[in-house]
Length: 608
Image 1 (tube, rainbow, N blue to C red):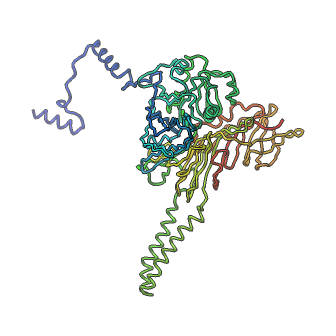
Image 2: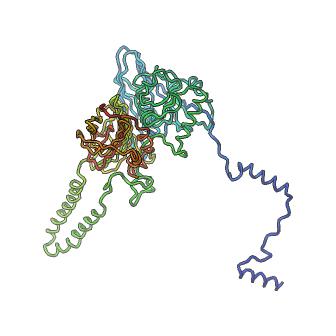
């Protein structure tokens, strides 16, 4: 017994386990039983190396059907769709059907207000319903609101307010203009009850929204019926949606598809690039359905896809704030100097404390308490004036901005297709901005602190408040199709190629392809002329990918490689330039002090 205890103590001192502490040997298991147990374990785990078997998506769609809410007061009746599909970005199209059975026209104001996280967003729209008329009005609601209070106001009418809510998409958010039967026959996709690949909202084609903002943020927009049955302004919004980065599918392309989609190139069948987006022209139902599923698969975050091409950065959550982190994910602002000068203010406050404390005590001993009563308010006034003077002299009252954009210049139709990003900072909040119908503002994707914007959608989007709070940094993305007379004119004079810049902004550098040769454009001020330089054929396009590139912080905010879109297949008469200035976005009309403006524009030259 003593020998066993001594051996055990010696083993413990040496760091080994004593013999009596080791588990007994396991009984022998036949090889057949061991293999069977391993098979059972693999089946329960979902396969070798897979601890948990994921539920796959079902190759089908699920309808998100809104619940009608009926309101009436005398001759005016309203039906609102509640519990509608919420896209991942952009706006929720709030549908309001108005019916006036009276003999006189009625003016109706649609209003939405969302409150949450200490902030509120409000949108409104005024519509006129004619006598004995049925009218469908749309009110874009920011997706960050999710829900809120809807009010209808009309003279001599009293409608009750009701709570509006939206439903998050299980699959990719798809907006279908047409009936469910037309969608099924054109795609061959089945209707499923759970885990759908597509979450679908159906809208009658004749009631389709006329604003681009109603479509931005949906993964797909599908026209299931006759394209020619759509109102002209609704089709303009759909074409703009595709050109600014959306995915548009036509189950039954019309014969005049080339004229309806003027940016198409190549055979009009299958999936085709269209401006910054994609267009799918279907021929067979089964192929079309599988193509739609493939399209949404490329938009999933795991595949590197994104619903919108620009992603402005917002503030971080409250629990991550502190130090030098001003934006989410550790990103830095696009503008320098948007932080308060804490060091200078601390120095000024320290001097104030020294002047009031020890300085005041010395003054009271030498001059008496009356001098102290005069000196302390005077020092406080001087300190306040110094802080205000610093804000006025250094930062001023103007809006500081940095702008970046990508533009397709459609010279044949005098319009510009633009995807832009801007960063703003100001001491005082500006009055507001106006955005046309075929344009949309995209705020940061931050549910914890969404932008509290007040907007009127009567004629486009008029932002009346919350666009840029005072002494706050804010980023906005923009997608727009705007009319423009910007152009680049070329003219041959012997062996020279003269260029005139009429693009509305200083030209920093550019290229143009003419006569199977590439010419380099010199730096030109707005309205100036210059002579282009013929590029050697050996290095004509080797530096273009580096030329069409943003700085790294800006590049991370664009969900697109500029060279892959603007630099592809530069044909005869096409140009690609880098511009400075405010750019061709709708908010360029806002007076700002521009810190940096960088814009890449592709189009066709004017001239022989």
